[in-house]
Image (cartoon, rainbow, N blue to C red; front, side, top):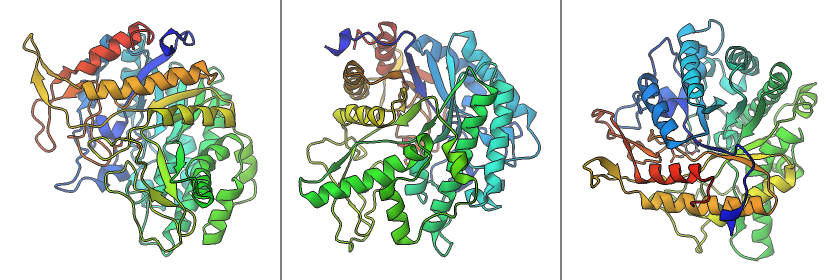
Length: 471
Ligand code: BG6
């Protein structure tokens, strides 16, 4: 019975957001623009200008997080609030905002869990070559150094880069890929190499200057199934594991490219240029833990090498067949959510086991949750709410599997669903909601942005209060 499982003392029950999806105030308080601000500020497309207006309402939000019972709140610092141009002059207003947010959280006993970089590369750096330019590595390290020196006295948990693997595998979708280049994929894997170097230096720096803090990566890691027991399908799954999951974590923990991933890059002419000293930097940084985001598993089949792009619309991340290596498939054993994403709690348990067995580092889940079209209704007391039993079911099933994995010996010290409060989804606007707290706005009608507790709010509150005994 997973409910009887004793969790580690001070298990970090939390919830997550990211700066560009929740804060709004995209050009206020001295903030500079990021690539994601600009990529989406087109009329009629997802709008990240106001979001949930958390920048102005963070006190009200943190009070609700405290009522929810959060032990930790995972949020990201917008690089462009600290350095509007990515480097150079520091924006004091940005420092002041995160100072107040952190102090507010601590005043309620909520542990801040801070992501340094969540898709929002400063536009000024992008214009100078972005991650393709090695100077961006120095800019990121300097940004981290400033952030550590200002907030390191209070923040004990740090995340380097959110979903670097998604930025590389789906660079197009996140506006991070420059498709005008002659060989955009080669350029992307060069950027990847630079991001890994930047991450390694930041991990090393954190461990030097903040010896009592802990730092780790936050990729999106999932179980990958072969479409059948055909040996070539199994090989395809093995291939996809190597380039989707292990490439990133092997580099972070072991400081080396795995053989299959390197072969994949080599065959396509995509191997990055590795400068003298790079491999030493990568080998000399050890994270304290591994954080990962999990929404769904993935299934792949053998590829004849002739497939055209065949991702399924509605998949979390469009999986495109790589000629001769693998091709995207479906898993008929899984149901899908309203957005076509497969729901797979057991895959979550498998993922936990796989990561822990490979790296033997403590794990924390930094995203897991259900995006849905929530409907505002009135409860018996006349208060607006959302009857989101579907979200409760999703989270219950995943937490149950996490507790079983813990029972089996996997070391997990926190669970942070996506998201603490409604925010703008990365790909599908703000009518796709994830939060425990409803934000009263529509896609393009900002309304009054009032906050309402959903049914899942009360469910998660009870779960935290009882350390999951009331699952
Ligand atoms: C993760 C990201 O990829 O998935 C989040 O870290 C994102 O930023 C989340 O919001 C859910 O994806 P989406 O597209 O439904 O917002």
